[in-house]
Length: 104
Image (tube, rainbow, N blue to C red; front, side, top):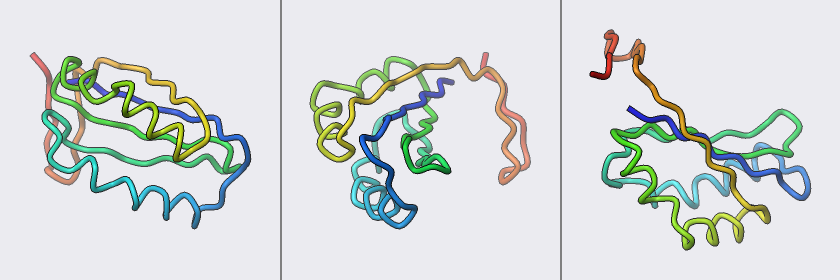
């Protein structure tokens, strides 16, 4: 499993309400994307950084999302270029499903 973290250093702070509105406007885009099983939106306490945590089946599927078109759309929404960082996720604790999942 792969976890991708995206961050945007915003040109000016946004409120939780502004972030929520932006996040809700883009959330439908991520439904049904091959290999993506969860996305969590992020906003820092000072409102200067936004982003997301994406949970993927594979790096190939993750990289297929972060295209030039995706980056352009993100730049338009947030006024900042995204930074994408990938992490291996060999073990996941899922308290909702009450299980621990280990990648082979």
